[in-house]
Amino acid sequence: MKTLRPNPSFPGGSLARRNHQDAKTQRVFLRDILGVLVPSWLRWMAAPSSLALISALVVVGGCTVGPDYEEPELSTVPDAWHQAATDGLGEGAAPLQTWWSVFDDETLSSLIERAGASNLTLREAVWRVEESRALRGVVAGARVPQVNLDADANRTDQSKNGVLGGVVPDELFEPANLFNIGVGASWELDVWGRIRRQVEAADAEVDASVEDYRDVLVTLYAEVATNYVSVRSLQERLRLAHDNVEGQENTLKLTTDRFNSGLVSALDVAQAESNLANTRSLIPTLESSLIIAFNRLAVLLAMSPGALDEELSGEVPIPTEPEAVTTALPAELLRQRPDIRVAERRLAAQTARIGVATAELYPKFSLTGFLGLQSTSAGDLFSTDSINWSIGLPIRWNLFAGGAIRSQIAAEKARTEQLILNYERAVLLALEEVEDAMASYEKEVARRGHLTNSVDATQRSLDLVLTQYRAGLTDFQNVLDTERSLLLRQDDLASSEGLVIKNLVDLYRALGGGWDPETAQPPSTPPSSFDKDNEVKETEAEEAR
Image (cartoon, one colour):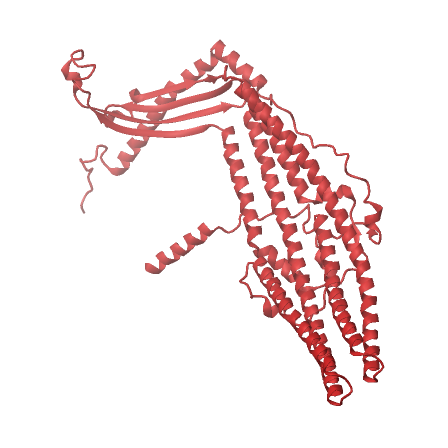
């Protein structure tokens, strides 16, 4: 049996003995480093001047300059809505979170659900939230020490004709190597709260981006519902136009028969033909508007134009309003309207920036440290004699800047005042939109009632005038006027039925409906196109292998 002997080419004999020796050498090396660094650090920390400075920084470390944010108190929010605007509206909590369910329309609910999952503007808003969260992480990173690893190796040769030529002996001009490796750290001590205010502002900006997302959600759902109602309203108007065409074709046949019988002149036939052609000319315009509404809905759902034509075709009635429509109190707007919440969060962020600017009036303190190795020989680089280190407490204080710092503070305060006014304006505009939407809804409901009566009366008039015309008791002009009036009144009624629902949708939008303040959050990690590209590349690589 062959005996295994140590390999003389390895310094430690066997591989196991060599690994053991290397580990021992590393432990000794680390012990030597700590033996040099720790006593020096403790001696520096124990120095009276260092202790006094550090103690002072600890005492003031909790100080945060600049104003603390407080939400503005508003005197412009009434306790109740204006009485004239709420006539006919019920009192109580409004079904704002899923307001579209009050129409009991499965197709509408499906469209809104799919829009919330696929709309491109909404997905863009999600990525804006991700961006603000990432930027917040950038700002928050300044609260912890920054650590860097540096290493380099170079070989240099000094010029004998340079400033050292003739002064330094020639043998010192030989090329030399220099190897460096080390870890450096720096940490800004947030004595005056500059970084804390930056993080505070970044937190508020994250909140604002979330509210922007919710605002897009509110607008999206309202736009989907409005376009859906437009589709149903246009379909009803087209049906009525075709019915009127059919009725006027019968009238043309009647006048033609009476003309052939010598009972009326050719004028009646020409007028009937003109009236029929005019009614037919309305149909292409309505069809064009319907195609536009189809396409708009498809794009809102991130689909190609025309993708919803088949799904939305067919005779489906216009959605109807619930028996009782209720509205929340004005004070609820401050909680429910995302645009008001955005304005408030932007104001909070800007208030924190006053503190960031104010902190520039005071000195900045940092802790720095370096631990490294330096040697002219690579073989000696990891010996204890190659250790070099430093510890410092640098201070930087901008003593004179020509008034720039105080001017910056003044600018931040001016921006804050602007955002206070912007917040108050957002509240007033929200109140205005709700009052306008309530008034528009109620008045359109009243108009629809009058139009319904008008259509019924005009239909009865047409039946009577046709009977009289057949009996020769009236001229054809009365028939023409009544047919034209019926077409207009029916078209107005169909438009009004759609407008009532659109105004109700606008009321829910003005109230900030479409999301739940307790649960509506954008996706935390939306799918990234970069991730998809990487998956495709990995799949192609696997197939190639």
